[in-house]
Length: 212
Image 1 (cartoon, helix red, strand yellow):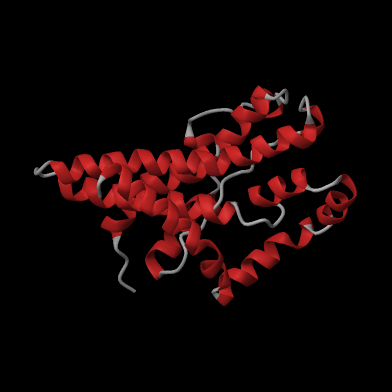
Image 2 (image 1 turned 90 degrees about the vertical axis):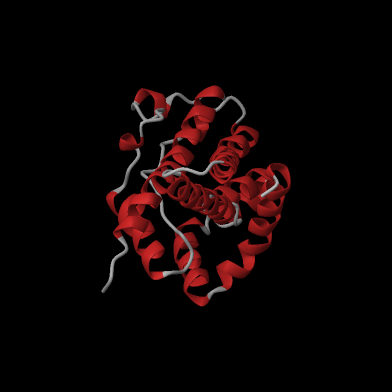
């Protein structure tokens, strides 16, 4: 097996930050809306080390990068006690959207670096461009995956917050089956079909804004 060490090295920074800052964003917004749980446990931090999960943050993204397929991964979930939010049902929506929202913002940041790399011509231009392209790609991928309306994904939390209480209660009982359903969608290729339109739309927006 020929492992591309250079590719892993270039992709490491955008992959780790895409996954870990996604979780940190949940904690920041939860604290803003009244739940200090993550802050009390020291999980509201921009330090990736506090959020890294060996398997989900390092091994799985590295494997998907090397062997192809959807760039996929996760960090240690930031604890959120929804009962401590000031308005649990509505505030849950914003806490959930904070994760994908942070990925979209990071995609814009990497696009800006890509524009910088394309406008310069020196020793660092090529690796900077490659790192930025991966940064845009993985952040848009994670944003789209997390917006799929399946619990416990962020999209599932948003849908839960929008449903009437009785329907939300019934929908909440599907959470234990959410990850198996997601894995089934992943291995069958249906997940790519579901998330591709959103990725393409966000990609076109970034390309238009930054003239890429």
